[in-house]
Length: 173
Ligand code: S3P
Image (tube, rainbow, N blue to C red; front, side, top):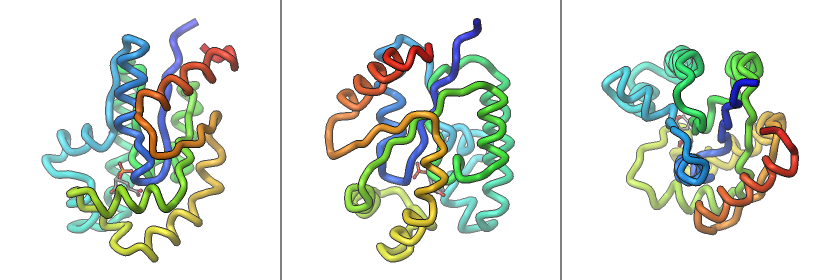
C-alpha cells in the first residue's frame, strides 16, 4: 500500500503551515505549502493574484497547482491555503488521491488575532466582519475533512503530536 498524503486544511490563521512543517519533521517526511508553490510558479503571492486578477482566477491556478503537487508523489504532508478545501473540485482531487485531510479547527478570535498581527496581505479577510462572515460560511465545508483537531493558541509541535496520535489511533497509516 502506498503512503497516504496528510493534508492540513483550515481557516486563515489556524496555523496550517507551521503545523504541517512540524508534522513533517516529526514523521521525517517532506512537506509543501500550496500557497508557497503557487508563489513560485506564478512569480507572485496568492494575495497579489487575488487583488490583481480576482478570486476566480486564483482558484483556477490553485487547483492546477494542487493537481501538480498531488501528481509528484514527493511531499507527504501538504498545507493548503484557507480556501482550497472549500472548492469541490479540490476536495474531489484529494479524495481521488486518497489523502487524509485534517481540519485545524481554531476559534475565530484566534484566527483573527493572527490575521491582524501578520504582515501578510489577506484580501479575503480585509476586515474583522468580512473574515467572520467567511469563517461562518466555510465551517460546514471544513467539517467534511476526514479528521478534526481543535486547536488553541499552543505550539505547533503540540498540535502536530496530537495529529500523529490521532492518525495512529485511527489506524489510517
Ligand atoms: C485564502 C487563504 C490564503 C491564500 C489566499 C486565499 C482563503 O492562505 O490561499 O489568500 O481563501 O482563505 P492562508 O490560509 O494560508 O492564509
